[in-house]
Amino acid sequence: DSLTTVNDMQSQKSAMIQSFASGETQNVHELMITMQKAGLAVNLTAAVRNKVLEAYRELSKLQF
Image (cartoon, rainbow, N blue to C red; front, side):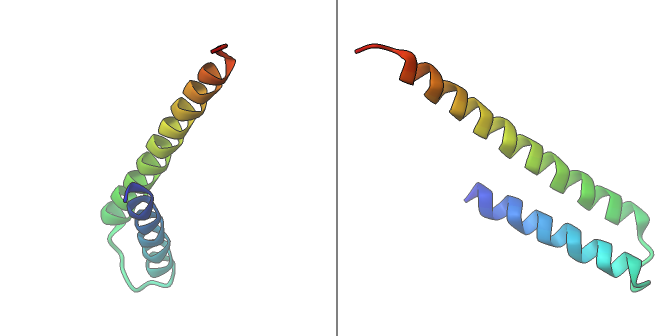
């Protein structure tokens, strides 16, 4: 399920931020990549949702 994947990516991002902030890891590149992946996944999900809502609104305007 894509929403589960997006949620998992957000959780991984949060864990990486906490790990970096606490000094457990110093890998800035990995942190930035994880943040970018999570951000892109959220943006893609929002874009798909918006398209579905737009299509629904268009269909609801049609008179059968």
